[in-house]
Length: 243
Image 1 (spheres, rainbow, N blue to C red):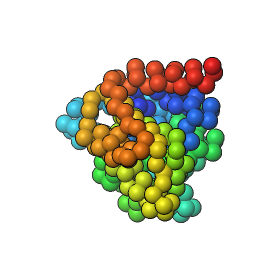
Image 2: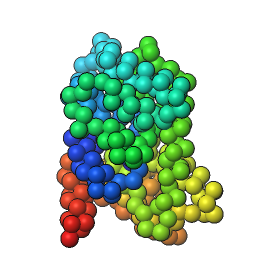
Image 3: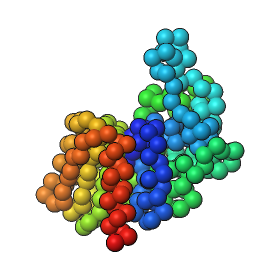
Image 4: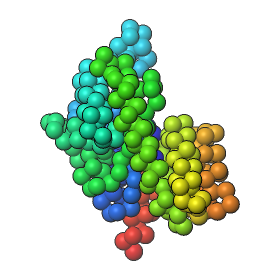
C-alpha cells in the first residue's frame, strides 16, 4: 500500500523490481500516488510549488494531468475497469517520457492487480472541469472490491506493507480486511504487517500494525525516511531470494 511520497521520491523502480520477481502480488495506492505515477510516466516530472500556487489559485490546475486522468476514469466506468486499470490502459495509448518508471503500467503489463483508492476532493484532479464524481466513485469502488478479493491470499504467512500512507490506505485496508474475513470464515489470519514512514501516525499503527494482527500474526513499525528505509527493505528481500 503506497502513499504519494513513495512515488514522488523516486522509489518506483524498486517496487517494479519486486513485481518482476513475483514478490508483490497486489499493489494498492492512494490518489496522490497515482497522480505522481501518471505524471512521471507521461511528462517525466511531477509536483509543484504548492505555497506559491495557492496564493493565486493556480495550484493543481495542470490541464493535461486533470483532463487525461479524468477521461481515463470515465472510460473505466464505461468499460467496468477499476481506477488503476483505467489509468494503465490510458497510459498505454499515450507517448510517454518514462514508461519504465510507472508502477501502474508495470503492474498492468505483469497481470498484477493495481488498485487506486480515491478520496473525493483530496486530489488536484478533482478540481478539473472534466471531473466526474460518478466515474471516480465507480472505478475506485471497483478497486476497493478488488483489494478485498486479494486479501484471502494473506492467510498463514502473507505480508502487508504500508509505505507512507497516513490515512487513506490504513482505513481502506481495515474495511477490505473485514469483508475478506466475513466471506472466508474469519480468514485471513496469521500474516505480518509493517508500516514504514518518517513519522508515526495513529491510523497506520492501529489499522495496519495492531488490529489486523491481534490474536495472530505480527505487526511492525519502522520509522525513517522513505529514500533510506524502502531501499534497505528491498535489498534485504532480494538478498534473501538470491541466497
